[in-house]
Image 1: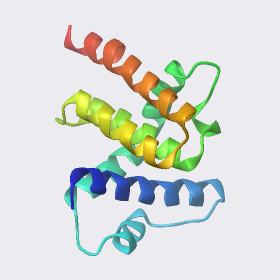
Image 2: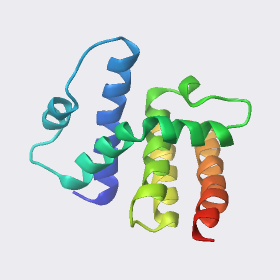
Image 3: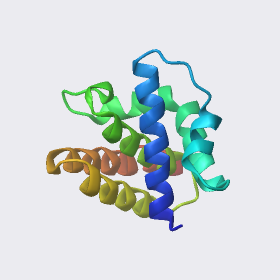
Image 4: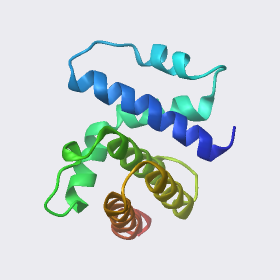
Amino acid sequence: MTRHEQRYKAMTILYQAFLYDNNNISYDIRDIINEQLEESNKFISSLVMGVLKEKNKIDKLANKYLENWDINRLGFTDQAILRIGIYEILNTDTPDITCIDEAIELSKEYSDDKVCKMINGVLDKIYHSEKNNEEK
């Protein structure tokens, strides 16, 4: 499975978790991961668990750069894509440009053009503002 396919799986798992959360359905995230995967995958598990663990921090940062918008107003797929992108930029060794490109590719496939541009803009702002401040 390519990294792109793994990110797609993580997006799918997060979509389901966000749907359950929105409808007050209890779940064990490990069960959702196991249902979606034929075999264990550390990359997917770490993305999903990381996004869920850092969700409040990620959302706060996303909302900082979403102009006149809130991440919770986005569809669950769009929320998953944006949160994965932000999580990867802030918490992984994956090159930032790759994180942004992967999020854009997922949004091109599963969102509309307007949302794709918005995700690109938010991730670009986080990359230029937040990451550059960390490195100083």
